[in-house]
Length: 218
View 1 (cartoon, rainbow, N blue to C red):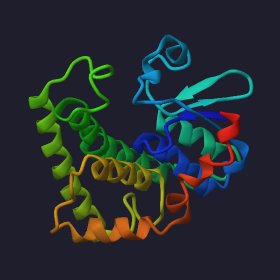
View 2 (tube, rainbow, N blue to C red; view 1 turned 120 degrees about the vertical axis):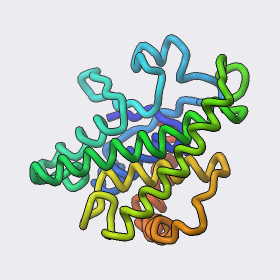
View 3 (tube, rainbow, N blue to C red; view 1 turned 45 degrees about the horizontal axis):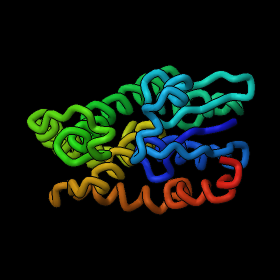
């Protein structure tokens, strides 16, 4: 398998963490797509992913799978023992619901703030910006942080008793928030404590290291 990504990107982080949780790092070659140069918007890459987003998984038969949730579902099904997307119907439903909320209320909101209310990836890539919309999404992301703080006051993980894809999505959102210097409100102590614990997981701590041996393959 090949994965096209940008090593420090918050969306690629989601798949890198999933790979670490599944111990599948050795089965993947990483190909770096430079976001700052706009390589993800060039025709060559758009032929792989119409949306022009990262990451993208390429299978040996030439199939391309984009979108973090879809890639995680594929990886989770490889060994027939899903641990990230749920085992029972209830688990699957709750995990997908909470992961989608994490995208809408946090991760994607931070992304819009970055692309519209900050310099983003620079004028060569950010061809249109709406700062007002960006700042609205920044405020939405902070509300999302408060929402997940409330969730984590009641349970140890975002979707319940076990680490899942939903946790990975919130981690991605907080990674992005750090990149744009959008702090978690100090009163969100449950979210901050949870995030500190998540950063100690080997899959999170070592997500950047897995690109090193693949550098020559990119």
